[in-house]
Amino acid sequence: MLEKPLNIENDNQMFKVKVFNKLSKKGLDRLNNNFDTNAFETEENPDVIFLRSFKMHDYQFNNNLKAIGRAGAGTNNIPIQTCTEKGIVVFNTPGANANAVKELVLSGLFLASRNIFNGLTFVNDLQNTDCDISSEVESKKSQFKGFEVSGKKLGIIGLGAIGVLVANDAIKLGVDVYGFDPYISVSRAWGLSSRVKQAESLNEMLSNVDFLTFHMPLNDSTRAFFDSKKIQMLKKGCIILNFARPEIIVEDDLIKALESNHVKKFVTDFPNNNILKLPNVIGLPHLGASTEEAEDNCAVMVVDQVTDFMLNGNIHNSVNFPNCKLERTSDWRLTVLHENKPNMIGQILSPFSENSINITEMVNKSKDDLAYTIIDIDQDPSENLLIKIKKIDGIKFVRKV
Image (cartoon, rainbow, N blue to C red):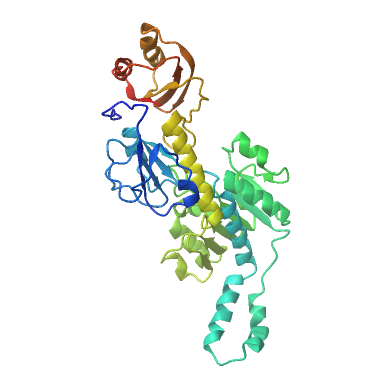
């Protein structure tokens, strides 16, 4: 069960902010005067937390905390279930770093196909010798001969924000692109090039592609998704790229496939001791979102989302609560988080009619066992009204925004 807040909010509250990690100044500068920015790093009782990769699983949540903004898409560093139980809305920024990741994925195609990594290593090692470097590279360059990506086949598993961009730009490079995503959204489908071929089945795609790249979130259904059974479906000599999450692939199964050369090369943004022992692995230091532009985009997006929630009660891009937005029609607004069960709305609205308060607009959205309602009214609600709503069985919190 969710814990009810100790106090009902008031109109003039100043929200205290805590920031973990280094967040882009461009984003933090967007916080307005309703947010106390004097103790970003030391605040011990925040209403809002912003972070990137800081691990929160051992963090002690205070009773005032209402929102956590993750400047990035992944939220594995945040205890989502705990936040849900405490009524803390967790926001992320899907798509904000998509272009940065896309560019790195395309770089990975070239790193693997043209033997750029091995060639660079060879040349750099020559600096420590007495040889004529120019002559040495000319005589040995043939061992680094690669192949062109144009005309090759690329399989993409997951056509979200990043997957769509990778697909569209790979098409422009002359690559024959196959996409597999049984859950693709309508908005992503609209943005996908018509030249991207839809794979009717995973087996069909895996057995035909020269490159395979993953662009899927990590959850219970995708953890250990790519195992020995699926690896055996692959065309022999396929190159795999993983810039999504390491846990998607069963590492032991991949290592066996790399050792047998069933998989020709593996390019990853998540190197570790085991995988880097292999000569056909190219490891990068998790550079996917490491651009100035991506960091700015993520910070701006998450600050705007959290600000809209704190000041207007709107929820957009939450990983644990239903997305719910309503343009303001009044100066007085209540937001209610409650159990998703029959007759909740009727019970919530009853105190308004009893107090002759007119509802000018409202919206209700649900997600699994939770529902969230935004209600605009024509007068300032009394504390007594809020207490009546809060006492209804199934109410998790009531906020006046």
